[in-house]
Amino acid sequence: MKRILLITVIVLAVLAGGIFGFFKILDNASGYEEKQEASQNDAGSVEDAATKQEEIEKQQTEKIGGVQYDIGIDQTSSQEAVLEAMNKMTHQKVKAEDKWGAIPMIPDTINQVYEIVSNSHFELKTDLLEILDKWKNRDFSQVDADHNYIWNQQGGTVGRAYGIMSQSEEKTFVLNNFGQEYLAAMGIPE
Image (cartoon, rainbow, N blue to C red; front, top):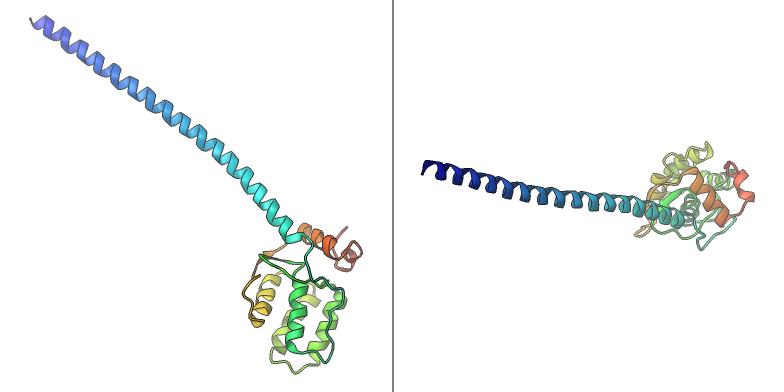
């Protein structure tokens, strides 16, 4: 009788071990499939991110409305008109959700605006000259902050800058909006 009981216990133990092993194998297979799907989704996410980045770059560099080749202001212009011109000048350099209007940011236009502000009695004269001094010295490292300062002074609600375009993006923007002849004037290699 002890022998039958011992054999029964061994058979039950083997069966329990077999059932446990069977479910463990199924669980591992399921985990493997989930990892494969996640890996494929990650690859898709990388592709989606690259596609999204290309779309953002295209949006930032495409032809926009309101392009003008002269600054459209003079010594009699208001502070608001000067702010508008400076805002449009930044559009070739900044990333923003929405941009309307562009004026080439070349030494000539920067100098023209600088002269107008220098000879003005604008409330923001000191701040604007500080920004224009940086631009005259080809320091555009804070042009997104400059844009947002100007944009805030204009009461902006749409089009806040969230970064600075790369040289390649700026080159594409210039080609799309001003043409080849402006690249050299802006110091952008062709």
